[in-house]
Each structure stands twice: as C-alpha cells, then as structure tokens.
Length: 431
Image 1 (cartoon, rainbow, N blue to C red):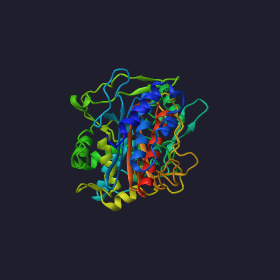
Image 2: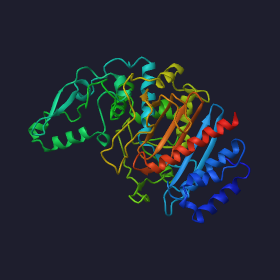
Image 3: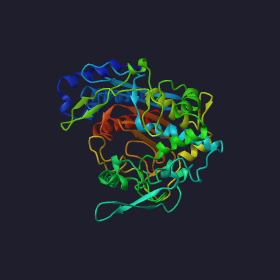
Image 4: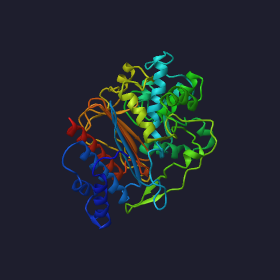
C-alpha cells in the first residue's frame, strides 16, 4: 500500500466512525467526510477511506485495488481479509479466481496467431467440432416442447467468436438456452442423438450475447499452436510478462494466499464458501478457470495500455492492440444481460442508458461514464466480482479484486465505482 502524509490520522478517524456505529450512514458519506482538502495525495486518502470502511462494514470481505498510468502505479489499496471471520489479511499478492477475465488473455493469444498469419479474423473457424463446422440454430420449440433446429445461415468466423456474436450463449444469462437443455433432457435417447448438444441461439453475426465463444477460441489456439493452452499462455504471454501467479493450477504456496469466495445473503451479509477442490487437470478452457493476482493482471492490462509492450517485452503489435479497442460489432448493442440464476449473477448493465459495443476482448462504452472513465474505455470482469478497465484517452488502467457472488453484486459495484471516482479525481487534481 502506498503511504502518504497524515495517512494514519485518516484511517484512525475512519475506524472510530465505524466503531461508533456511524455505519448507519453510507460508507460513501463517511469517506467524503474524511477527504482532506488539496491535491492528489489527499484524494488517494479518500480512496483509502472508501475501501477501508467498505471492508470494515463487510460490504466486501476484502479488496485489492490498483491503478497505473504510463508513468507507473499511482494507487494501491489493500484492505480487509481474504476470508471473513478468521482469515488472513489481504495482501498485494493475494490470489483470486478471476473467471472470465481469462477471456482477454485468450483473445491476446489468438491475435498473436493472427499476427503470424496462422489464423484469419474473416475466415470460417477450423472444423474441430460439428458445433463449429456445421452449426445448428435453435429456431424454437414445437407444440410438444421439442427443440426445432436448422442449419445456420452462414459459417462462424473467428471475429464472431471473439466478439460474442457467433450465437453461443451461457445458460446463466439466456432463458432460451435453459429451456433447450431441459427439453433435451426429456427426450428419448434415440432422439437425443438427433439434437445438437450446443446449438446456436441465433445466426452468426446477427446479434451479441455473452457466451461460450472464447471457450471455443481456446481450443482453436491449442489446435493451431500445437500446444496445450496452459503451456501456450506460459510460454508466450504469462512468462514473458512475469505473471508468475497467474495459472490454471496453483501451487500449495499460492493456495495459501488465495482469497475465499463469499456468497451475498438475502439480508446483505456475506457467507464464506468452502475452498474449491483442485485436482490434476489435462484440459483447460479459454473462457474461465484461471487464478491471478491484482499485480499480475495490472501488468497485463498495462501492457495493452502501452500498445502491446511493457518493460521491453512486446506481446502484440500496436496496430493489433488498437484493433482490440475499436467497435467490432457495428450497430449491434452489447453488454446487457438478464440473469437466469440470481444466486450466481444479478442482471448486468454497467452503464445504463449508454450505448455499449464490443471490441476484441473488451466491452466499450461509447460515451463517458458517470464515474470518470472516458468514452472509448475498455472493460470487463469475472464472475466473482473482479474487474478491470483501460482508458486509452486518459492513459490509466486499473484492477479491482474481491471475491463475492453474485456477479454484478450491487455493493461490490458501489465500492468499485467509488474507487474509479477517486482515481479520476486524483488525476484531475494533479493536472
């Protein structure tokens, strides 16, 4: 954590307010009351106050929040505990399950192969499975509830998979896909063989829906590179960047630094969940299942902020990184999801009223956000409320790591937004 003058006084005052029962006010108001007048250092104390009070009030169990500009790290906030009610304190190297934040890593791996002309964004994807080579679209259900499938109107292109416009979805945010799975479970075994196990919910390029697209991309990376996904990542991305705590399978030493996932209960409290079981694995997904730390992931997005290289290590060409940050879906809208399982995810709309697009790996807000980020900023997150953003205009990148279910948890997002506001307030004060 970065130290500044008067830090102890600020934190001591904040803690007294919490202990005195002042949490009846919102912790945002408490943090504002502690904000020192003046320049950037005071603004950073303000972020400290927000995060400290949020973890004291158990709005989130613990948090690692980091931000950097082209000149290096400008803020580190590390507060709370890895596990409520007895766990160790959060540290800079705490290991998190970052879930779908792997998708950006898989996208970078794919674009490396595009740069090498081993893949094309505009060509049909390799025919590694009937779901890709001869895709079927779920047209609807007949009167008996039996799924009605038809061939897709066109092939699936790599750009469709990278932009979530291929037609693959996650049941977590697609009621039609949930109904399909329930329907085929009721079919006789002879009929099941006629039904595609993973049909498209719409024709490729027709609309946007977040789904298993990057899981398929991971398999394509393995096919084209001839390397298992974990090996490819380590050799071509994670190793060169020094991201030594980012992996599908973590060591016992890393396991000792892992934060626990916490479930949000109906009364707003958090319940620590059992640690997930880790077994030897031979297959890996490009869409989820990876561990990382705040410092590792910040390194990764700083590389993208700086045009594909950092500390003399180049991962992608600048023109490729620029392509990732451009709207790749035209007039199609993106980014809004309706949950089918509220225990795992809330409805998702991070920028209500703002048109959202998708590049390669990122969601893009087309207008300035309410908490500071510029139009054209890039973002996404992971199921357990880990998030990042990259603001190419203001030249800042940040990560926010906690471990809470459901995704898009209101309280976690409130803390995340306060962190964002504090970073931009600091940048404004320092100009």
